[in-house]
Amino acid sequence: MSRSPSLPERPRLELDPDMTPDERLEALREHFKEIVQVNEQLTEQLDAARDRQHDLTDEVDQLERENETLKTSSLYIATAEELTDDGVVVKQHGNNQEVLTEVSPSIRDGLEAGDRVAINDSFGVKQILDPETDARAQAMQVDGSPDVSYSDIGGLEEQIREVREAVEEPLVNADQFREVGIEPPSGVLLHGPPGTGKTMLAKAVANETDATFIKMAGSELVRKFIGEGARLVRDLFELAAEREPAIIFIDEIDAIAAKRTESKTSGDAEVQRTMMQLLSEMDGFDERGEIRIIAATNRFDMLDRAILRPGRFDRLIEVPNPDVEGRERILEIHTQEMNLDDDVDLGAFATETDGLSGAELASLATEAGMFAIRDGRTTVQQSDLHDALEKIEADDDASSVPVAFA
Ligand SMILES: Nc1ncnc2c1ncn2[C@@H]1O[C@H](COP(=O)(O)OP(=O)(O)OP(=O)(O)O)[C@@H](O)[C@H]1O
Image 1 (tube, rainbow, N blue to C red):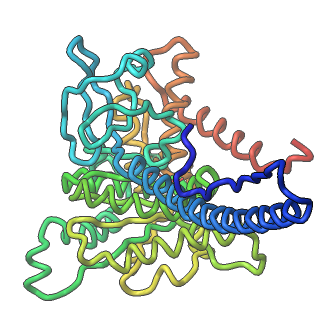
Image 2 (cartoon, protein in one colour; image 1 turned 180 degrees about the horizontal axis):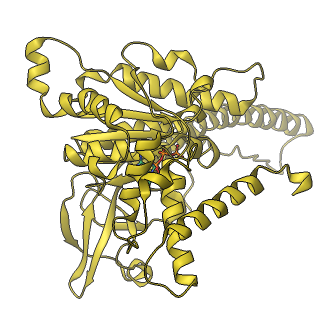
């Protein structure tokens, strides 16, 4: 390695054998002075080099960080749709653009059709995504055309009317609202006991308006995606904007919007952040076009009132357990594909099912079919319905026995 030209020359000691002792001493003194001088120069240079090294290390760190951000921000999510001899057909999420792209052999080996992948600007597949890491896909259920219609819902005529007015009309007749000069409700909150058809209502309105149905469960945000809640809420609204017209359905909203408790754990802070993100998304919602938002809860009493203010969930619709006519209609709906004996009287049977939810009536119908099968029949009789009711009530009692005695 060549020595840096800017380094000072090494001083040389030249002693002549003819020198007197005094002359020798003088020469040695002179040499010592020169060495001290060179040493000072070298120390200065070393300090300067250290400073420069510091600056360069900072610069390298910054470049590395920038490189890292560039690498991560330029990757998009796509699905590998088909593996062909010419390459892989990938479909980018969001804009649904399909392209044929080449893949390195090492990635190709582990790739299967249907896998989620990360692609760069030029559609090169950079990575196969582990399903576990794809929180957005896991946390949100996206349905382009849900298969529930209003006629599948029993006994909620008034609620259907209200949902149509608050959600369907603003989507279908947006111009009319604009001309009249009124703002449609921002968000609709469905509240009532479990299994009464709240999700069905939200799906039916999406179906009726040809909107994409995007569901997120509040409880999962809190339990499964700890630390990611706020980001996922932002993603939820982004996805809805990409897929508009869209219905956002937030189930179990109480999990992220419960009244504040006294305890101040870090979990509470995280839930709080998720809720603040939801509120800020809703507050900036007017400019978002054809997106409507519906939430559901079984625990209306627990909700933080902040989410019920005007401009947020300002239309409340109660979805109670069905009355006797509702129960008869729900039984009709869930037995319409079943082979019922002539003796079956759903109207009379409905009077005996007071307190059952729509979901319980649906499983009662299936249970009755099971009794018929166990008995070797192909038709369902009134007695099967009674047996099914007894079983469901017994199951209910068992599940409400305190654990210590169960
Ligand atoms: N009113 C109804 N008419 C017809 N079927 C119903 C009705 N309510 C509930 N069901 C049946 O129960 C199932 C569950 O209903 P759904 O998920 O809509 O209830 P939910 O109110 O959203 O419940 P949860 O609060 O537990 O989420 C439905 O798939 C359907 O089979």
